Image (cartoon, rainbow, N blue to C red; front, side, top):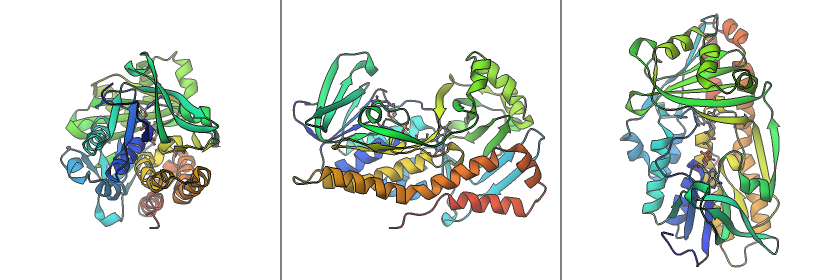
Amino acid sequence: MPFDISQPFDVIIAGAGLAGGSLALRLARSGARVALLDPARFPREKLCGEFLSPEAWEVLDRLGLTRDVERSGYEPIHRVRLTTPRARVLEAEFTGLDGLPGIGLGRSVLDNLLVQHARAAGVEILEEARVTGPVVHQGCVVGVQARGAGGGGPPFELRATVTVAAEGRHSSLVRQTGTTRTRSRFRPRLFGMKRHLNVPGAAAEPVGTVGLHLVPGGYGGTCRIEGGLTNLCALLPESALRTHRGQLDRLADNLFAANPALTRLWETCQPTGPWKTVAGVRVEASTPHLPGIFYTGDCQGTIDPLGGQGMTMALLGGETLAPFVTAALAVDASLVSLQRDYRAAWHRRFDRRILLCRLFHHILINPRMIDLASAFKTLAPKLLAAGFEQTRDRPAH
Ligand SMILES: Cc1cc2nc3c(=O)[nH]c(=O)nc-3n(C[C@H](O)[C@H](O)[C@H](O)COP(=O)(O)OP(=O)(O)OC[C@H]3O[C@@H](n4cnc5c(N)ncnc54)[C@H](O)[C@@H]3O)c2cc1C
């Protein structure tokens, strides 16, 4: 063990993604003794479209990460391009937000930046440590049980005043300490698959553009990232996964053939790594039933991936939670009311954009709607840009 675990921590955070990493960084800077656990060794790849909305610049700035992101070789993104199986195209510029672009940046780079900053701020980071459940004492969460070697190693316990679940979707801590409510089930049920590609010039997404290429029941999203790579991240019906017996390349061959833009890209690209997948993509929100634990990022609630808001929400979510965790560290803190007040603050801050992204999904995933809209060459791009802008409301404070 790289540090002393016999002394309780102020805060244990399970999961060093954007929500957990950013929260750890904030709390350590405010003087808390923080442990951050993750089964991965950083830098690591992660399933994600890797498009950060322009609003993220503000929260990256507050975290002190702007300069590192600027130097990362990220791809500035200024517009979105929707294409349909009938080769119709609808494009919209991102508007407002001081003209700042969206950010195309791989999670191996971005999450690693956060982990490095957190370490420098004094966070005690335990890589290759998988949290398996809570430690509960007299009805209150007082720490976590974990296993080393990414989950296959020996079990151990860590104790803390406050525990935070930040393990992303399908969290075991959330399952064992609270309940999860599905707010929107996609029909058909959807799964995500992501891969990095080298795409030759002619077939590549135009510079500064994020693509949403519609196929039956879903879409393939494309986003240029650092190093000249393209992220291809598709959200597709789970039934297609079963039909193709889990053979992802064959599935891609068949489904991407429905859209000329995707066909061109897929036929000419060179993948640079394996597919990453996630099943059961839903819009959900969770509520803890035991005191002593808070949820953040996707553990607290998810948003439809199509709006490209999940990462920004994870970063903003850490910001929303930090003052409640700090208050919970006080000797006479009422953990139950802090939990309740935090959940209310989270819903106030994010429910509107979650609702709008759900609405967007139902409108944009419909190829016939986009075919029709593409005929309105001036109005449709304006409406689309205004719609995306609405999902990026600024915090009230
Ligand atoms: C198909 C798809 C595409 C998406 N595309 C985009 C996009 O382009 N832009 C965008 O903004 N959002 C996108 N999102 C959403 C975005 O990826 C998430 O909202 C965001 O990553 C949430 O951050 P998080 O820190 O809560 O969780 P995560 O990023 O999932 O991080 C969780 C961390 O916890 C760790 N962990 C897991 N289990 C354990 C355990 N047992 N113990 C300890 N640690 C654990 C993981 O290794 C990981 O490091 C997409 C989502 C999907 C499904």
